[in-house]
Length: 489
View 1 (cartoon, helix red, strand yellow):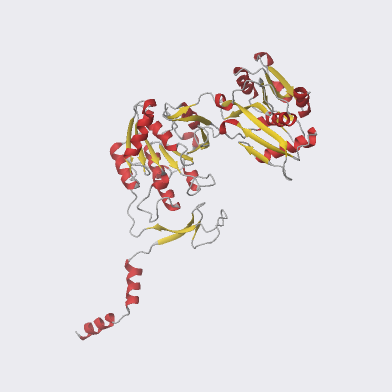
View 2 (cartoon, rainbow, N blue to C red):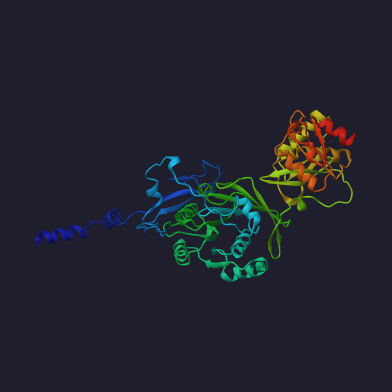
């Protein structure tokens, strides 16, 4: 009895801090935290002022990466044959059975083209774009127009009434698909509704609003975005259900969240456009099931997005008489051939330093072409302002518009118009040579179809051409001097 009494007094007089520390280290699991860069997703065990990966300042935020007594992940994988079990035993590539999967074709031909021929079952597609550009409208139109497939549209940004209001606005062009709306941000509740509804396609608007109970950080943080995307990826692969994720972008034009987000998904689509123009471009940045250079063009109207099957109708302006500084070039984006109008304005500089500005075109390549004209053509453009514009509000990276751009600059400098029935399709080298471009037959056929009477190409493209097939005049040139003498005398 005396020993028990002494032991009781011994435990009673232990300092409170020591007892609390003993209880915490033995009975309570610690919170595991780390620091993430909110710009690029770089992980660090301690706070840093400057990110070693992206060199951004004051972007590290502490996040809890593991909660105490974390429960089992909410998405329960099948217990029979999982992807992990199948991958435990390596297989010879010739012995793997491959069955061609039937793609899901939508009523949107532009979206089908960008995706590579339709929606692949089990694919994870990420769509990014600026606020208000039309990402939610595009996905809602997909959900409303997809006949014969049950679609679940999950929104974490809008209420049911707001989505219904937008649906009524675009309902005139929809075909009454089987679309269900869910306003939820918890992945646990979303997967519970998915198990009950069993949709054919799932749309998440947006991935930055979702949160998982297994991560103790705010929605939109690096760890939450990565964890939610991993859960949706696991769900898509194990159930062969296509999932579309709408993602926000930063002020630099990059998709918000960790860079690993773009590596995890199968397809990354960029929805681009200028608010001052009604046209939108859906561009494939990454595509595991098709070409990554395709693009689709839409026109934003009051009743939703309209597909533009002939892009040349928006990229060519209607004019009654020839104007100086305006030419037409043939460009290729993916499998699509387009004719774009290039405009140039050359004027005397009112200040000491001449201005160089390009809209829809690479400014560095424009400066290179101006240096070629200065050195090889003898035009004194170093003291003049030069402005270049690609009509339609799109951005062109095809070097085949070099010759058309050079002709527009000289046309504006000499104030001599180029015939609006003339087209250009060639690249300009540093020595002033006219270089060949690929798929020249498609470019010539597109110019002929739209009523052009003449097209300038490189003489090195003429070797593999059958000139008898075309009814358009084909002018083959090898130097920029030949082009100037032909056009301007």
